[in-house]
Length: 145
Ligand code: DQA
Image 1 (tube, rainbow, N blue to C red):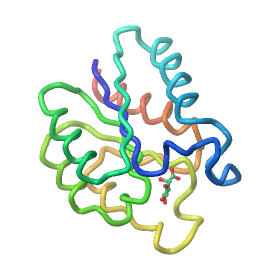
Image 2: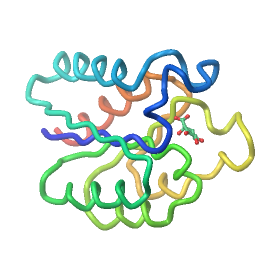
Image 3: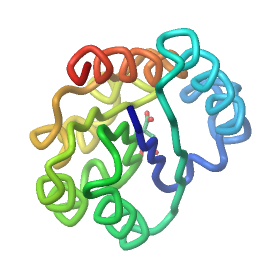
Image 4: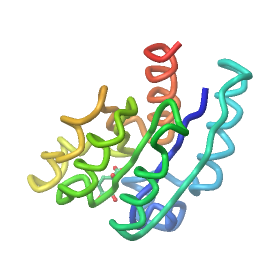
């Protein structure tokens, strides 16, 4: 089972960026933790990680996942609240996708309460910090196997 994990803009700054909101782990540490979790869950899971600060880069990556990946986990970061292009890309490739947010976007500013991406997804996990990626992987795994 091949799963693509996409992280959007400014998530490369985790560890430094507003740790009181996003936690103290770096993206690299979150990646390592998810690799260990995936191996324990099922050794046949293969993860690929991609981070981009650009909307077009994320759209290109989603398109290139067509017929290659079985599932996508995406934290679209700020593009969650603005990107019709990323939502359309997810809808185009017909790959089960789970949206993740480190923070609880619904307890924050009003502009973070809506997602263009979530309606195209299997589900959304928000507010569980780095553990949200593991929860998303478990949910995706259960719905794919
Ligand atoms: C985020 C929430 C977004 O509103 C924000 O723009 C991010 C991170 C999260 O993981 O909590 O960059 O997606």
